[in-house]
Length: 211
Image 1: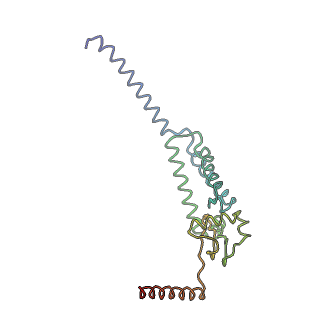
Image 2 (image 1 turned 180 degrees about the vertical axis):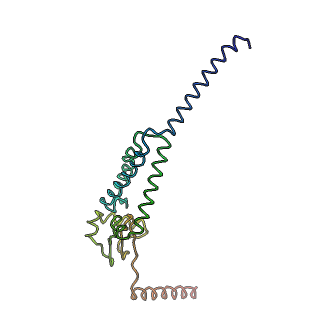
Image 3 (image 1 turned 90 degrees about the horizontal axis):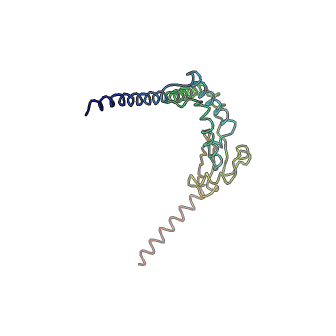
């Protein structure tokens, strides 16, 4: 390489290195440097967390049950709606970690506090609702929770029941899940079933002897 080429290549190399270093510095700054105060990054998730607890409590347990597509759409759009409220104008990794740590910490604190205060826990989460009792649908409770009979039937189908006639009790838990309890056969039904099974065995034995 000629001396003049070496003399021209050195400045070009320094310029390239400087440009690369600037890009790396900007990348690291965008990733890890906060553009909002730490206090704001902590207060935003706390405010959204408290709002969602109150909002979902007022909306009712059916919102968590996701009994129809509208409930699912509400929950999906709700998460996107509050996203900007949590992160604000900061998209850094550090800000995200602070927000996540804040949510985990406040949730642990709330759960721990409610664990030691049972009455307050019932007030926040609510009590289970009896949707069916003794094989009969409690229409008043369905109306109170805004659950239609078709939605109740669909929830029963998901748990393996062909119809509501097979169900003794149905309970809507505070978490939004519906628990179904099958009817137990009466003594008369059990005896009838035993007689039918015996007759079936006798018929099979007779058929085997004839053959």
